[in-house]
Length: 309
Ligand SMILES: [Mn+2]
Image 1: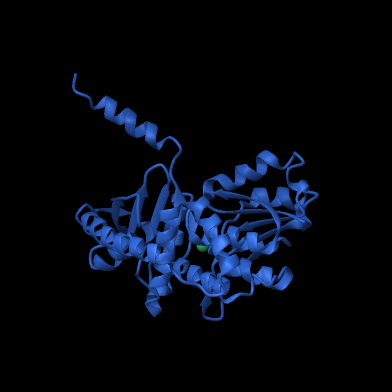
Image 2: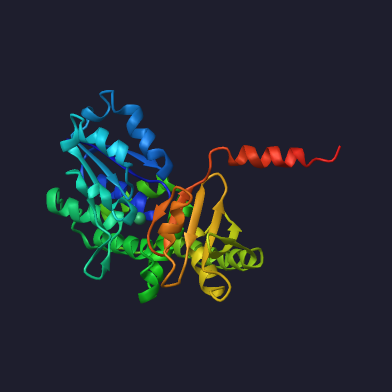
């Protein structure tokens, strides 16, 4: 059986499904995409034999637009296709037989990884998949992605996210595939512990520096704290939203060349709705949006126009 897994490039919850795929199936390809790339990935291949060459196709921690969902629905391979996602903006996809979009079950917030793991246990359980080390990594991923780690102060979840940045997606996948095949229990190696500790210090400095550079603007009736940042985006957004909750309703992080991130800690501020102003999507207190394609060009042009002769 040959499997294709398409998942979110941006974080642990997107990358972990690839690791799970490697534990469940012997033959698979993977593709990690940004939200803005998903639709064109399907549209460019739907009229070729690309998808029909696989026995199962999974899309995790991501959704497609209504337009693309319709195209897939009339394709010959729709019965081999499964979407497992937890973004509330994608709930409309549940109208299609191939999608399972679940934000929460009872009071448990789901994540792309946790939903995919449940699916695999139900339909493709292997000895490896049911190991403690695997279910533990899945739970850390869910805790990180839903920011529930905070409730239990489960810092290991954060540290696993740190290791993903440290290794990079490809190396992380290779590393944990072999780790999980050899270890029934999860642990960080001594080298990883040293790295995590050093990174914790670096992160504190980075966050302190960004606190000083936040710009506040009123956007669509909200006071928005804006920063440019490349690293620690989720944690930074949450720290800023918490630290400045008297001044701002939400925080917008501009990650040049990548995306916009929105965070809030206020009960009444739904950043997934705010993100829609920027063609984005997400959850109540954490959302994202693509950047305009011409943004970098616009900035460069602006700089050149401002040049002194
Ligand atoms: Mn996710």
